[in-house]
Image (cartoon, helix red, strand yellow):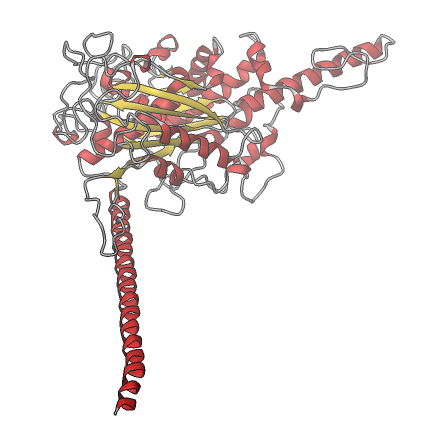
Length: 574
């Protein structure tokens, strides 16, 4: 269903209730009220789609005193984002198919009353029905589409200023590779989604028409010529569902400097005093749920390279005596598309994701059941144990794969399962600290809802680093180094919004990676329009020639008939 949210309170608005940020100082490209963007977070269970208005920064990165790259200089926080509308659309097969999911997403985007009208740019926001300074737009209940610049009628020609797309992977994230950009790659473990183009349908749903051209008038045949429509320029940015929240967390931290300290400790290469908040240039976002993914911002830029980070598949050091080995997903697929690195044996995901933890729990039940059977036989019994997960009074054994992952939410915080989860994630944190000298690690995903897991990760990380790095004390790690996402379950969505913001930011600085593609699209539209005009002229010429021919033929036929009738009569009179 659709969840409609009231506007968030911005900063810098005047007493009349102008949009967050007030005058953005960047001309009227998007209006002082900000830009309207579409954000799509593509998840394996559901797609979250949001339509937002965002205020743009008041200064260019090049004018910033910071020496870091532009993403560090541009603002990103909850205060400058107004979520106008949002919905969640199922995407899990066989509940639905990829085609059905994408059609539902596109229908939501096309039918939104918050699209920009085809004839105007986003306008300055008026005050909300509640009044008050800094409120971005009227609430949904206060009237949909009543402000200048919105479509107001679901006009299919309206569009959006930008599109941010964050998706599960592996995903094509290199805009130079048009064959794979915005497409799920063939190596995805989600077989139904392999090769699916996410970006193409979304672009078609989000790009509106430009009404700046004339409507053509009538052609020479009297038929109404079609309007010469160019598609509005749509700014696009695509990344993974872990790189995107990494970017959002990175931008938010540097603009708000949450926490009392930073990992920039005083050493030979860094003269920043301990416990002094300073801007960072690197951040890792780890999501721990059905799988484990890693997003990276290094030198203030999201990391792509050969593909994109896949840190959930790096090997780990299991706890002493651990015989689990790894989850079932990695077994039996070797050397072909969809294979799992290391076959999932003793990797972060193979030991620490919810699938692995549930299978491990089932294994624990089997071992406990076997022990009870053995004790029962030793006491002269039948050897049939009654234990949670088995069928009492039968010879059935616990099926570890049939246990639902929701069982994890019922386990106490001191259950041994969480020690294994903490160990896997702490190994990953240690690898990031040692290989990338990462400054901040943010943890998200469903597993982090377990109270006490974060503290276990802190302790195990300190044990694994073993004093080699100068880290904050264990009790301070939750503020200074390894933290949970401030966005909670909306981390992925806020990351998608950050992508759209970065696309607009790059537009203002003339550095949008999709500029060439958009220009090529405009050229293609112009060529199609010229071709249509030429065809219309040919049809008009053909019709004119046809009627002229008929007329000439009729006149000729009349003359012949006259000659035959009157000419022959004259001969008889003579």
